[in-house]
Image 1: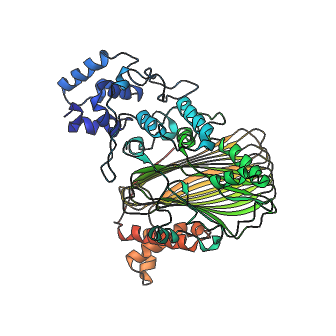
Image 2: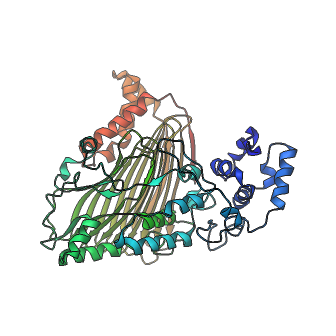
Image 3: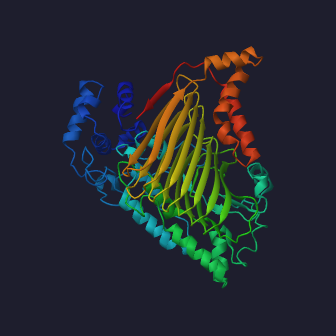
Length: 584
């Protein structure tokens, strides 16, 4: 056993900015451990708490270590004025990395296999992308972007509160192949519960990142391309239609491929102090995705009441890279439901999704976003939107599933009168970790943004919200509101809220705030005095905290599942007095 396994060292390490998982996994290489600690700004002598013998042994190894011995040059202990520290990838490898043993791929259902560093995890995941000739250039660009922008680190502001070692510590994950069981009756039965009735005839289903024609229903969208009204379907099917000489399909394909080149915080220079941290995972998605949902609509498009895109994960220790591109032309209207779910007994998987939304002048998009994966799922999504003059983007987001969830939302209001409304509810219980970072940029005059965020945190769960609103100097007349409200339902629950405004213009109307509370004892007493049991009163108050947003969902099945989640939280609740709360 390594000396690092001593109880005192582990306990002390939990208080540092370095992750316990990385250090324990890197015990085979003392050099990597020391570099990790020095890079995180820890004082090595103060960190070691296992006695004089362990302290002297640790320091002897530290002083004997060359500065360039692990993962390229040793990062400075403080970030520079221009960039934060980020471990390089694919570059500067040294003998210490080259001599490390190859990662062993475990069988499905086995315990997660640790990797020696986050960079190793990204290198492993990016090494075997899907073999799609149409996307070869995209994959190469993604690998180049990943090498240039580095990997997440605790020293970076966007990842300061995230459990990086849990997100990027399982080397047994493998890329999901084509789903051979996509048409099975058992899978179809499980998927049917997540399909919205209002989207009948316009339902796109992807299984492990690959389009499933058997589970999809596009009967109401079949002649859109022939009429020149746009396209709803998969990128692979669109490419086949364009190859057959369909000019309308060719036009939609060119628009889709152009938007596929857009990567958040890579296609533009992001301020390292306020970025959402989308670049590494967006680059990984670009390097590995095998298919894409494409929605291309115009003002003349005749669509049913709703278009639904459902991404299904079959688990089995896979990593998939769902992709969605939506182009709403000038004056168009679209009602979109984007859903994520997982099926099967082995739900261990990693979803790394990327969504690109482009709204033209006067376009209106109503967007329902549902994250309902389950089990030991790890979920990451980056959503980026550009709204042109007079456009409106309304987003309703519910996240109830996955053990570890991170959602980044970047929106740019590029034209006068553009509007973005973002309403988010995170329901977390057990040991779930949910994190939402948002950035809304007002880049034109008279733009409007509204952001309502609700956290319901029970048991030992944790929620993080960091919301940023930026008002450029040109964006005079901006009207912006941001509010985060949190319910802490247990003493062990934790929530971190960081609302922020960055205003450069001088003629604006902006506000932001955050509140945190437990269920009101007076309200509970009132309901019990009217005949409700204590559990019923709690469930009613929790439901009241989110009903103002949940009632706007078009999917009745989703509303029912949200009520089930609230009931599950209520049955496992113990009386709470405080919980852990922090706001910056």
